[in-house]
Image (cartoon, rainbow, N blue to C red; front, side, top):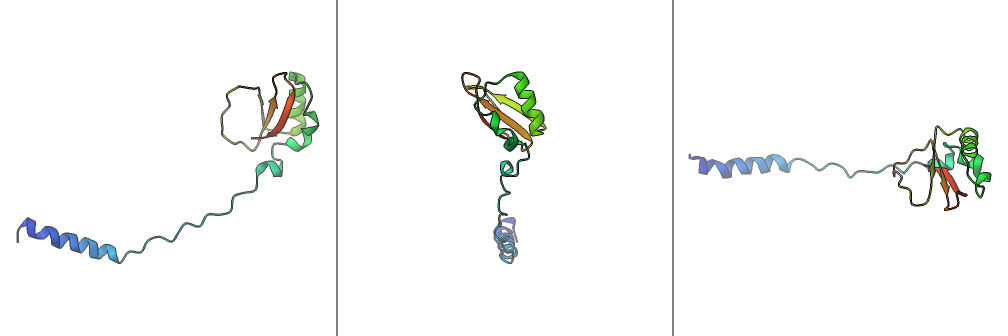
Length: 106
């Protein structure tokens, strides 16, 4: 038997071997974890009374200390920030006049 004659035989054997294989069960996704912000891991809930106040470095340090956040970042309008979500990081968003407009986890 020549090599050309073996090709269909080998191909049919491979296909026959694959026929007995079943496909893996469909992936069941777990429900998403609850939003970290709702659990308050960055402490944003404790410092919401600072929204609307003029931001200063001293106020920023007080916010970070009272919240208990491991990290804090101040975000000004038009400033580039990373999109990674860090549940232990406190984000303090300022408006164009350096007034605190939002405090949240991330």
